[in-house]
Image 1 (tube, rainbow, N blue to C red):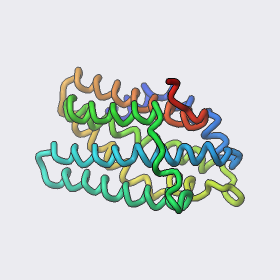
Image 2: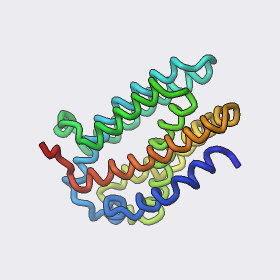
Image 3: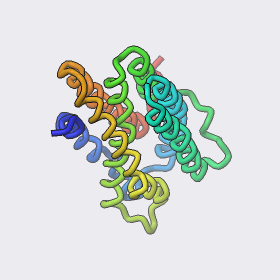
Length: 216
C-alpha cells in the first residue's frame, strides 16, 4: 500500500466530517449565505499568500532541479488560478484587507513551522492536504450540486473539475516516493502531519461558517 493510501485511511473519519459540514452542504446546494462565503474567500486569500510562500521555500530544499521547478510551478500557477477565482467574487478587493482569523493564522503558522523545522518528508505531507482535500471535497460537491442556479458554481467547477486532478496526483506521487525511501518513524510523522492538515481544513471551513472572530 502506498503511503498516501495509508494517510487517507487515517484521515477518513475527519474527511467524513468535512463533507457533512453545513458549509460544504450549503455550498453544494447554493444555500450558503453570501456573507459566509465571502468571509471564506477573504480568509482563503490570506492563507493562499502564505501557502505560496511556503511552497516557494520548499522548492529550495530539493536537490534536483526538476522537483524545484515543480514546486515553483505550484506556487505561481496556484496563485494565479486562485487569484483569478477570488476576483470573480470580489472584483473590487473589498474583502482582501481583513484580519486573519484564528483558524487562518493557525493554519498558515503551522505550515511555516513544518516547512522550516521538520524533515522534508514531513513538510511535504503537511502541504498535501491543501491539494488533495480540496480535490476530494470538490468532487463530492460537484456530484451533489445543482450548478445551473448555484451562485458558487465557478468555485465548484474549479475544484470539482478534472483539471485539478493532475497536480494532486503529482504531489501525492512525490510524497509516496519520499515515504518509500525513509524510515517508518518518519513515515508515521508524515501520516500524522497529513491527518492534522485535514483537521485544519475542517477547522477552516467551520471558522468560515461561524464567521469566527477573535474572542479578545
